[in-house]
Image (tube, rainbow, N blue to C red; front, side):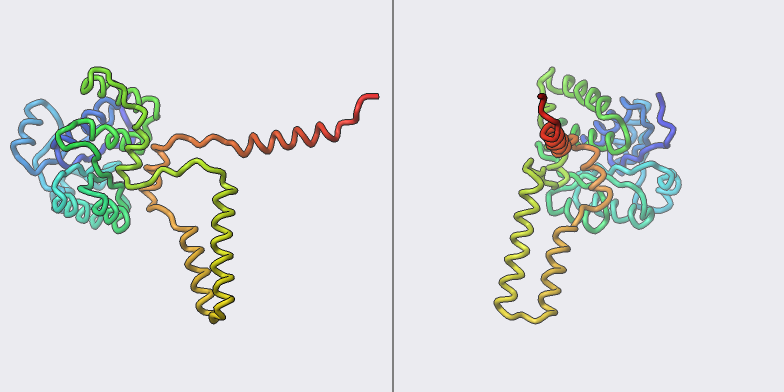
Length: 272
């Protein structure tokens, strides 16, 4: 079953790039690989793979490979400076393009995400361990619209190849979020969260009143609290988190239904 929505460009054909391309192959997503090392590009071409020698950061090369028509670009370059250069060049040429990137560390990932709206992930496991690519590749597949069940099946098959069947699915979601630098939210009642935030805001305003601060400073403080409440992830990063997070159980709806049922029961006339 081929994907009619176009192809994906994979920049870099090292350890991470190879497994990402393999996962794309298994999902029948067409891709074009680009590698600056001629030896790696030749080795891949000799195997019949669509990997070519070229620097995606050069506009004429990107245009020749129709990068502008790609559904997404996945930068898997291990070198921090080279990866940053490639991402900056791509974002300059294609402002609206979905770009996934491998980051060197948390600070690198944060800068890429905040300044360039790139879904940047930091590999958690050692460089020589192919397992580091599975959460990265899985996140890319899900974000490209592949059903979660199919992605999990593909990743399970790949794990068996690498680990002879050792089970690692339990940390899949946590690893994706960690690589994005996003903390997994703790499961606690929403009322508790909103109440604590309200108390903090009220206490801040009370303290300000006691200190007889002027109106301008109060307005600035209120604006700062509102900004913290409304601060959101960049659009692409938020989309990746949503695509790779387990659905939250709808506890409140059940509670509301139970309350309504109890009220109806109370209103029912007692039998004579």
